[in-house]
Length: 246
Image (cartoon, rainbow, N blue to C red; front, side, top):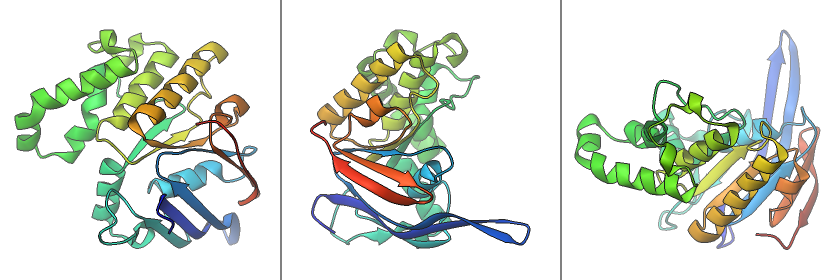
């Protein structure tokens, strides 16, 4: 690994079986993700973009290949998360990675603030969460303020617009101070003006917090924010280019 590479996928394959037929979706992909960058992955529907993102985020398991993650410290060298046990994967998803999805996935019975606090609720025991609750609430409120929605902290998500819900989802993704935030079509359910505001927010958070963003998108304007843009076709990368953005 180069010094700035935080996460490397090596020869990632993903096959699905339908009856007796094996359908290859990812066909031996290699990918390096660098600390502090914005990386976009584009391609038509069905080429494997979301499958790759789910595998990188440990929401799905590759058929074969390695996921070498360097993490917050280089002391012990990179770890292969593809072969890690279930508990290690769960900890990595919670502590190292954040997720932003097209349809937000906010819990309607919780307030905006409680939705942002969910990653901490999952990470900590009941006693630990109770002892740190005030501090965590302040951190969550600070994130809501950063994404411009602190005034809605006590609202249920059902009272928010699509853009507001996505801002809550981004704040939630950042609560545990992840190294990488994986975004799957984060503006795909938003109108153009609202989508542009989310673009600006991602740029600002990348610049000020040095958080790495990996974004799967059909939106060329969102992809244009990235320093690197990869294009997928039929389960492989067919194009890679660097831009001046980010």
